Amino acid sequence: MTEDRLSRRDVLGAAGVIAAGAAFIGLGGALPRAEANVAKMEKWPWPYKKLDPAKTAEIAYNEWYRVFCGAAVVGSVFSQLREKVGEPYKSFPIDAFVFLEGGMAGWGTICGSNAGANIVSNMIIGPRIAGPECENGAVIGSNIMKWYSETSLPVYMPKDPRVKTEIAKTTSDSPLCHVSVGKWMKASGYPIGSPERRDRCARVAASVAYKLVEDLNAWKDGKYAEKAAWGPVKNFGITAQQNCADCHGANIPAPPTGK
Amino acid sequence: MTEDRLSRRDVLGAAGVIAAGAAFIGLGGALPRAEANVAKMEKWPWPYKKLDPAKTAEIAYNEWYRVFCGAAVVGSVFSQLREKVGEPYKSFPIDAFVFLEGGMAGWGTICGSNAGANIVSNMIIGPRIAGPECENGAVIGSNIMKWYSETSLPVYMPKDPRVKTEIAKTTSDSPLCHVSVGKWMKASGYPIGSPERRDRCARVAASVAYKLVEDLNAWKDGKYAEKAAWGPVKNFGITAQQNCADCHGANIPAPPTGK
Image (tube, rainbow over all chains, first blue to last red; front, top):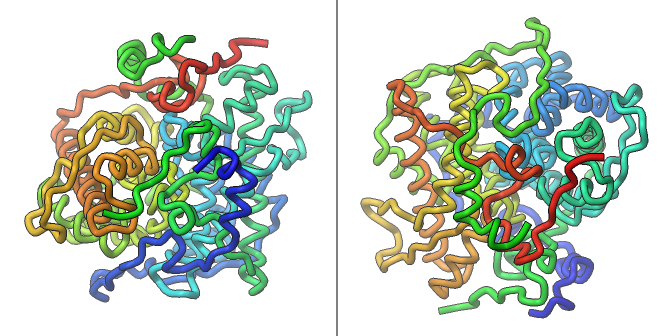
């Protein structure tokens, strides 16, 4: 495989649209579990009432300053559903997900806003092993990572932002925290501990929460028709992000195809 | 910063041991939430009874074939605590975490076994914003990512493995799925869809579950004395993994220090 062949645009083009569900990441093989061991919250979908994207984004923005990216995105949706629906949202420990901050306890891996969006979509709609009616849970989460990677963020402007100066927008080309934050820091010149970087990440969480609720509302209306746009296992023989050349340069490894 | 200065060993040496808690990843600034909005499961720590690491690992190994890495690690601990303790474990939707497979819906980011371990430790012990008695939740999760990155995995051998031939062991030098899986595939020659690769990942989940319960048992006994060993924000000015040169080579970017 060459760098040209695996440039981001080409990869996304080549991957195309694959079927969701069991073939989604090419692992398959799920086995059933005894009914007696299934908790009552492990029946999907959970009840969902449509939310206002802008209101959700405002909650995420403000909650970022209390619980940071991942728990802010989870809480922006679930705190409203605790009031509008009740259980099982009242029994979901939102605040425990603070650890998603900084790409999981500061390790810079998956951006907590992306992880939080995946948690929300998969909790509400369900895991793919629960049946075909649940496959949109993983699809919405996966496609938000793609949207996050390709969008100049943050797109959401809070009504009353804590930082009044303009915040730079950057495209991460990756769902990872430290790539996203690093590219923004390089473009803006602001360090990690600055109010500007903090407000940028709060606005990113708000932007993701906005997009997430748009998708959940479309799903609730039966209008979410997307399929998972990124299928690396099926197309490239390994789990992977879509920015191979960012790290590998011209030397993208070719996975073994058989033995 | 030079490659020499930031080689993995040097980085880990330089990072040293930093205080956990609010300074853990240098973000700080959490604000209190109204008591009325706190769910009953958002009080920590959750009741915990010590588990058998080997039994837990066996459960994780077998559950991998039903729910894959992340949910297998979560379920290996929580399914036992549902029986030994009851709530809040009975109300936690283990199976929804299938999406952690393949580094989050196949994107190859954080290995689901690492994500699952962080979920378990932070659910049981609590998030760092809940107070100093909860800081070990994030510390155990973070240090398992370090252990995962430095250990030749899988270390756990199932009692009755589905694949009878020897499974190669590899050191990922990273907490990410596609780096871990890719290095194993390169060393073993087996492709992603092979029974060998699948059994390798099931054994990795089992290995992480074993380590996780060792740590939780030590914490329960008041003997978990580790501090977070990886503090990139404080030491290097950005969230990051510990393998900078793996992706950046000799051109490790220097984050901005002020503006």
